[in-house]
Image 1 (tube, one colour):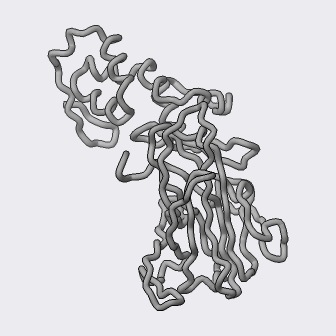
Image 2 (spheres, rainbow, N blue to C red; image 1 turned 90 degrees about the horizontal axis):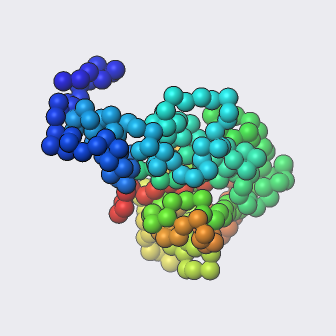
Image 3 (cartoon, rainbow, N blue to C red; image 1 turned 90 degrees about the vertical axis):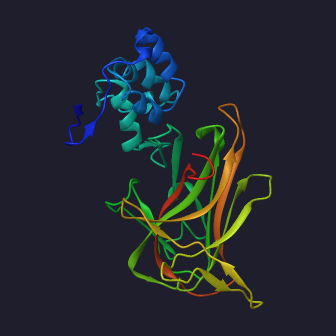
Length: 285
């Protein structure tokens, strides 16, 4: 029985019938699985553990071009260490306007479009939005809504930056300032879809105290998606999902938006970090 650094225990068998295979052959087989499967394979036997930790395996889990984005000042003892750095420490690209990383269990690509990469009504007018640096953000500056009666936030990106054959969820990531107002019981229409195709639609709210439904103008009731707290201290709301079937040569664009321009209520105090796209938890992992 082998001790983990944390004090926990993991069982590694002394021998497996597959140990008769050359270690290079085992590494090659594991490289066609996933990072999660590689970690499980490492518990089969000492031979599998050595094969599963090889640079050959973990290099296959790192997307082309990602290693070159890591600052040269950072050094890694193995491809395994590099892989987990790409999962835990998002990289800034496109002059700091986008952030990319890998989902730890699957190696799927994730991206966050900063607010600088989004289209917001009056976004460049300091009377409506103020751009400030805050330590909680991964980007240089974030916009704070000073006050407006309309809320229109739109984003677009090419699906080439994402993993093919993967279902993704789209989230708007935000925070409330100490003087956030005007969002109580306000439903915002969200859309997500490929450009040129009919998008999926739903209603969201920035008010975490809002009921799970709201009453429409015709007296009906509609479900509304509420915000959830993130581990990094921000809040997020799922705008929708989409399937990315293409690969590196794909030229499809995904478009997402959050709009509220029918209820002329003055509102402010919302801080937008960006729109995040990561693999959906269901129905595919």
